Amino acid sequence: MNDEKLETGEVHGSALVRAVFIGAGTLFLALGVIGIFLPVLPTTPFVLLAAACYARGSHRFYNWLLANRAFGPTILEWRWHRSIPFRIKITSIVLMSVTLGASIVFFVESLHLKAMLAIMGLAVAIWLYRIPSRDRPRR
Image (tube, rainbow, N blue to C red; front, side, top):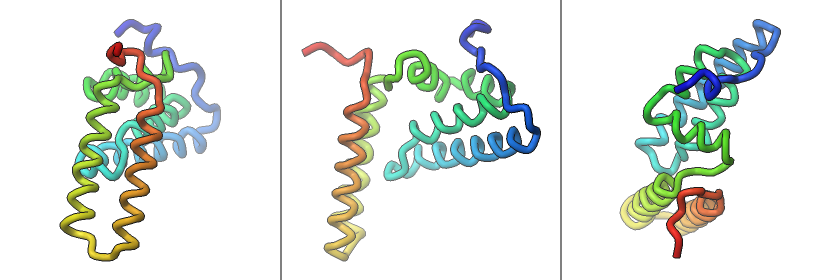
């Protein structure tokens, strides 16, 4: 990666505010990593929030996140084009649908909770699908 890609601007002048940004970024990154294993918890939005916090809290943490093989390309795609790669979007929707469907069918007994899970899953899937993808296959 060249240095231009890693340019973040100025970190906040206050050490306390920088510490809060770093703490929040670490929390969001942890939630994103947990989301890899719990598809009900979305990974990409939390990683993007972590990057935004790290950009204002620490060049070192921000550059480390951008250099990460798993998260860096998605962050850069969002930063430069405000889009998410189509493959990541579809994979996320499919995995979320499978795990939510299994939860609804096999684990949740209350009809109200089943309905809430289904509505939440549908809302997240629609929101995620509506985010632009520059690499979306042509029809």
